[in-house]
Image (cartoon, rainbow, N blue to C red; front, side):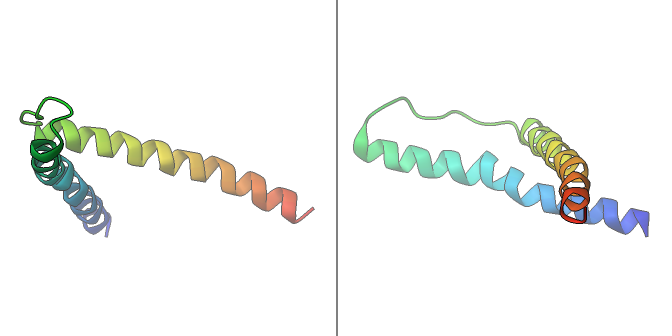
Length: 77
């Protein structure tokens, strides 16, 4: 059961990482070709993006784990 959760988490982090690594720079460069407002983006490393999304996911999860019990306790007083 834990393995399924780990695989599910990794897959849920992989899609945003792929979008951020390949789609967003491609789209930015296409738009930048028309507007010419800055330099084109170079290649973004997939592993670094995956690590960024993982750290963000952990921080958001910790935030909700800490905040929801506090809110729940205040509401049920």
